Image (tube, rainbow, N blue to C red; front, side, top):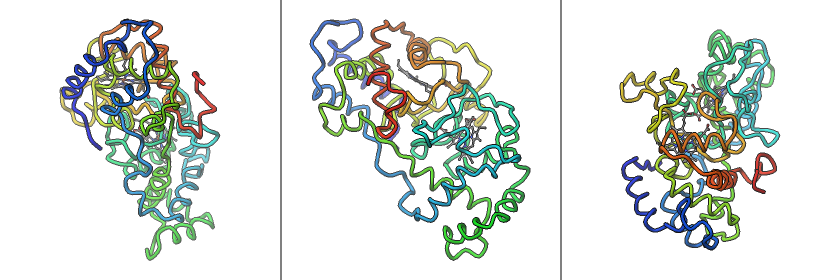
Length: 344
Ligand code: HEC
Ligand code: HEC
């Protein structure tokens, strides 16, 4: 995925500000409604539609994806059969790939310190977890099953033994991994779950707009897009996912109140990575509250207001918060849009 560096984006931003004075917050507010074609050509400098397919998905067979789906919903992957991946990352019932909790209770009720991020589109991210400590979906999937405050299984061998005792699994693994002598392995559990996750690609109205549909966004949503660009949110939230392509400090201009979690520093031990987190994707953001790595921003309005202050040193007016939130609501998967859309 193409990564825009912060400095190159900021200079792009300066250019776009000069071009769009009428769209800038607080300036000429009563000016006529933004023209879709003009907004689109500015937007295309920062955003691209979500690709139809995730990297690596071409080789995924139907059998592999079916097995992965079954494992994703398998409560037997937790020590007391109480939890599946779907417990913390619900993808059924039009859910946004999260549990909508500030932090998640694990199999035995204990909570970790971080908010569950969405699995939707996660395979497009530059790495997995808030701090990027897992390189990809396969590496990620091996973590929660053995994590004592998540699914709490005692060992890889115990997980394999447990699944082997369920009649359907040995057959399903053989079908998903043809030609392998001993296909029911911990590695293959992760491979299958990752294959299922590679199907979790969403499409929304911003995609339609970027591809040329002038009717896809309403006037206030177009205004919100312009405000998002002119305020400088695009310095970090850009690309097809509006994020998920760089690590940035939480609290660039004004410090974040909760400095407990040092983020990426735990992975690299580098001083300059203190308080850096993977910039979250904003696709499906209306479905995935509460917000931030610690789940402390209860609403999207609050997250937007805090971002402007912490990252850009700006106090947004209510109208600008409202239009940005209206824009962010256009990023909800069309198949899930009956939930969480405040603007339609
Ligand atoms: C008890 C709740 C819980 C369970 C069960 C759980 N997760 Fe998670 N998941 C989390 C939390 C919390 C994080 C963020 C942790 C961090 O960044 O340190 C996370 C992170 C992730 C991510 C990274 C997404 C991103 O944006 O970086 C993926 C993908 C994921 N989980 C998939 C899974 C899969 C697959 C399973 C089942 C094998 C699973 N999770 C089980 C809570 C859970
Ligand atoms: C300097 C980079 C940067 C800028 C500029 C920036 N953000 Fe963020 N944004 C981040 C990072 C990093 C996080 C994750 C912070 C955390 O949870 O610790 C984040 C988180 C968010 C979240 C919550 C996502 C989630 O899943 O919890 C929203 C919403 C958001 N940003 C919107 C915006 C808006 C709107 C703007 C402009 C007013 C903006 N951001 C400007 C880097 C940035």
